[in-house]
Length: 208
Image 1 (cartoon, rainbow, N blue to C red):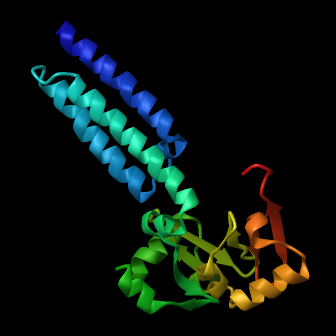
Image 2: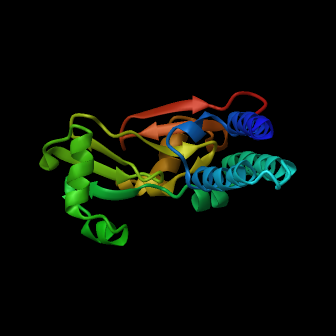
């Protein structure tokens, strides 16, 4: 009994440390890589708890490797647009300018009943009042009415998000012209958000 107690406490502490290392998002809305990591960690941790013949190192080492891998992936996605699109694909537009995107709904295998139910849980009762609705990469729905205003990130850490430009009915030609007009260098921007007309900028901190 006592060895099981010790093993349980040790694995619990390792799990706490690994989750703290990978960031607080693990206990909130998970990204794809985080969800996979959490599943794998739970499987790895369960084995030595149920079988005392399995050495603790067989659980501790894989847990730490998975935690380190998640940290590396999280860092890499901030530096590589290609990796970011792979692990964190852009949101799918389900409603644009008040019009349902039925093709996107079929592609994502979302029925109208499911959408209405998910929006109802967010206290959105009237579908006709929604101007934009997105299926985010974590599987959640986000919605905006005409009164909300929709500001989207079109430049993040110096990289252009063409997907969001197209949602707003803009293109990279408009972006270049706007940056030139405002005397801004895209590479020096940490964030640029816009609703297609009004623009807000945040410059990168020096040394980043």
